[in-house]
Length: 166
Image 1: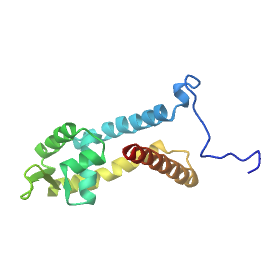
Image 2: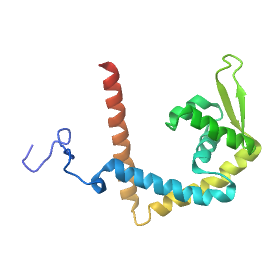
Image 3: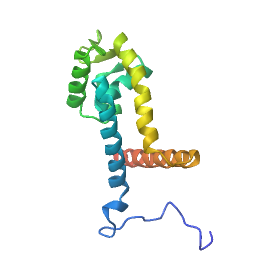
Image 4: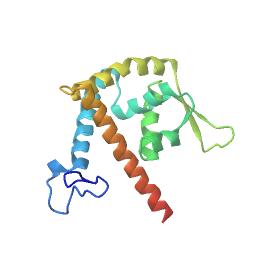
């Protein structure tokens, strides 16, 4: 390896006390996510939905057999918070809950006909919010960002698996 090449496995990007929040990936990603959620909430208000209520609709529109516990794990949301969110969209007539006949603790979820219609309409709203946040990016930059974020997710998964082994 030449002196100009860097071994990416050994690079240190942060040292304690030597970076500002504006340089912190966690801080910046949280700010981006907060901006997306705030704008999505604003635009979803006309559907009487919030972003957190939209997430289960989106997932259910893609896969018919999902449980409440699966959604909570997938979205990394506290099960009680997920339950409250699902209660709200159930009251709106968008989702139905049914207990498993095999294990009464398991709650299966399915979209109602109205829920399917709303999920289909709202897809465009979410796409607009994301596209508005990506203004000025090229397709190559977008693909690079997706690849880099996916790599960070895999690094985090590796750390959790590594911790479970030890």
